[in-house]
Length: 111
Length: 114
Image (cartoon, rainbow over all chains, first blue to last red; front, side, top):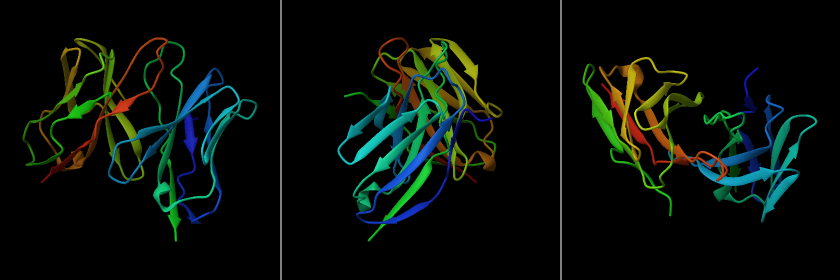
């Protein structure tokens, strides 16, 4: 089983919609996670950190479900500028320093 | 502000040429990474380094080598470029320890091998 799995999408939503996608992880010891955003032909950039029960930043909410081993990213009131690929990565654990990225979920917000 | 700089942004090379991709970070991070990214395949780790002169193979090291002579600099070398190495290459760095595990990326190097 891959360490991190994401639905590649694309998730195609109209402006103003609420959209959510998940990232499942296999290492039950992971304590925290990161969501990265990658615009087309750009580098990934940190969007949010997810510790313990979750995190909220404006229109973005990230939650961690330890029992089912997934994290979710909820985007409310979607904007055209939210169109991007969203990557999740678990905290480096057990002395490992190699970030393992999911393949990302593509989001397209249309007018 | 943190900075990872990939000096060569766009390169076109011929098959068989030796290619150097340079990466410099100014955050005194111990760990540095080279990834390649291709459509539908996500980020694949080529090599990483956790200290000066230390290197370890990632998932797809074949056809590549690396050099880390100074802490701030991590170079990716394509000994003999081939067309299947046409890709976007991303360098990244991250700290070790309790300071957090955030990884910082350079802007990417777009390599075309003809």
